[in-house]
Image (cartoon, rainbow, N blue to C red; front, side):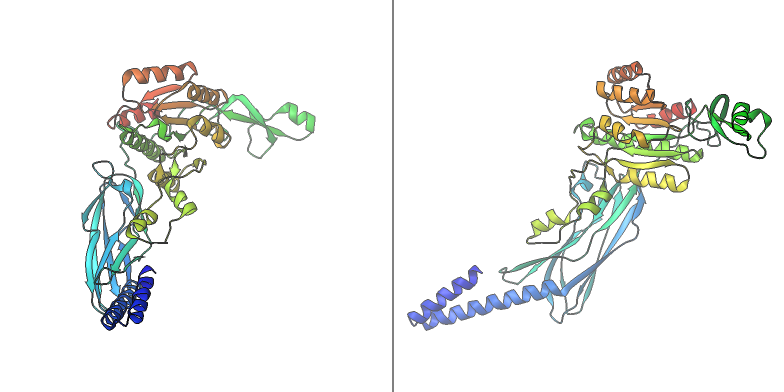
Length: 435
């Protein structure tokens, strides 16, 4: 309260020196300050708003309309309001922006007593993601500029933009052919040369399934259990550590990996095969649930900093969608792929070590990664030697870099396929699925 101290000192001096004019000026200034402070507080607290979005989920290329209604719930007119609907910084990077806004998110308005004003704008979704729309931040103050107030008028909305799905050229949707050639843990195609165990006889079991030794030993009929020799579906392991995606071209390569994962997911769903997802990326929705966002606003700059989505997280927890089949499973994976962000948490070696016990052996482990180090190759080789069918899609453009990385994987018995660019997604998926 510096102004209060200054006014008190001036008033004391006016009384001591009996300066009537100075005392009058001090009284007038004090009255203006008190009135301005009261009015700015009343205007800030008297304004309220609500936001409506016509959709909270969208596909790439869709437009989302936003309607904001400002209301003055007091009897006093509000001479000026500066309102801004905040967007996360990454929504406008890189060119072209992930979200292209049409209209004005930042507007100056005034409201009569009990009046309502409507503000509208829309944005086009150019890229997948999980975007925070808002909160709506207000700034107002007295006409002299002596006091300013800042408020958060609305909570944010969150818009989910699904990743693109590239159609697979030459892919037979009606095929039921399983992917890979390793044993799995549930019956699909049984191999009578591999006995997995025995169980009690059930009516309808053929005679060639009866295990005569177990029957003679126990005195009751037992039947053989055979191991299947083929698998169906895939568990997609997506390496989304930021060290694999440098600043130059990293955004394009990371989005290419997301599109490839979404395309494989959709293809396996169309085949009615199981699919799962494991990634070391950061789930934006989970980060917001854990960390939240701050309401304590002291200035407009502070409002922009604290009300926006936080850009960092120190959590070291993998994102896992268990391998299953069905339409709901497809949507779960696409939603996860829409929200996943680059992170500096677990690297691929740590991710494989952490999640291997939770990956089923009845589905191919399909790893999408941007680079192959010696440690990565050994980790994937150990995964293959543990009984998994492992294949890798290398998100590498240059042929010589791909050859070097594929050579390291070949030494560990892991097949590698090159994902060169976006047109190559269809052919890489077809080559893998139809092999």
